[in-house]
Length: 341
Length: 257
Image (cartoon, rainbow over all chains, first blue to last red; front, side, top):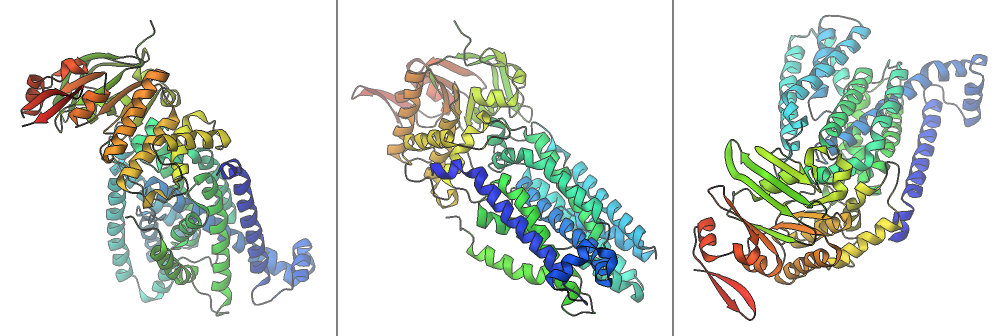
């Protein structure tokens, strides 16, 4: 056991290195896959001198932006999921558990209903997500305040309930919009609801946000480990409970909002990735937060590559792939998880 | 003389406007073991939560090692006093060793990872609560009493001068009740720790505590050396139940009627 404690950082670095290598491999696979398949050497050539060939144009103009967007969105969702699971002290929490995707969907679908363009749809999604974030924050503000953490009256269940009820409300509005929508727009709406990276080229904000979200939460990762054991205990061990919970909520929510704005409400990445990593690597947030970002990005990148190439030229919403992979994976993890006795 | 580890001045406590403790003043010094007794809902946990800084008092002041509680930075306070909550809810798997090493959190700098030193301290704490060999176990697989002893080990690893414990022996079997309380007394005697624990067993209180706080339903608190506080009259006033106090086998025993 002494060795394990001493090599904590070394073990973590090794895990991150392996995951980063997997991410690079996934990028290579994604860039080489599509209507024009590229051999490794061709891919290298296309990346080094993109202007010399059609392949170069395809890779750098079409595939690379989409791959970067997929990676960033997947990373954001998995990181947000890991943070929400800590905040709510619930392994079944995901980035949307507090109703954020519902708010975003109402904004995006509302814009589609009004017949507005892609930019307005993204704007609507962002505005809807922010509205959902602020609503939950306002309704549960007592749970983010000081002097609210005595004993068994722990704030997480009430915050969770607030979010679940909000999600139910948003779901009703979404159904209303779908009912009112003309048939011609329904397809686009359904794709949005399932999550779709088609046309997602704005990877820069998502990738920057991923780096920023990690930078804001990773330094507090050991505090988060303590917070997971209960707020009273965390306070007794010197963790600034209320400010930390607020920070986690804001970072996780904004990360989710950006992911949803970029690619719609892609499910399961934020739930399954942190959960699976926890089972495989243990529950140290110092290891888990960067690992979630890397693994979530890799998973979504692979899922998106499958979504655009499995039935090519037909493109599937990537959310369908993540759900098809995610549901059985999650059931498996749930069945073999440790039972409380 | 140095300041007491914990000092209450005219402290009043209440929940939802109902006063539980009225104008309590007392000083807990190094090497003293205080037990806190009283009926359910008398304010024992409320007092501990207030002393830890989890909630505000209705009135009066609390001083930790001479400094007002509110003036303590969180991390410094965590090196000055430890707290054992009454309940734990583990939502996630974690090894016993990890759980105990959490007690070292206040001593590690932001970028520092637990090392051999933390591991050794945690292992010693596990031995003290008779859990040697449990370090790899998952806390989710432990019994209630074992889980409680893991939490006690984490508190021991925290190694603060003042230990506040909310029902430390509630889920423990007879042998481990005695073992844990003996260890706390030893820490007070040998290392000058101050201990304050809530308990419902009068016999354990009389046997291990040096001082007692007895909370009554009328918001008054009796305090002093344990033998002077736990009288038949005072216990009846607090619990509304007659208790006979007898001396036998060199010990003070309480037999409820």
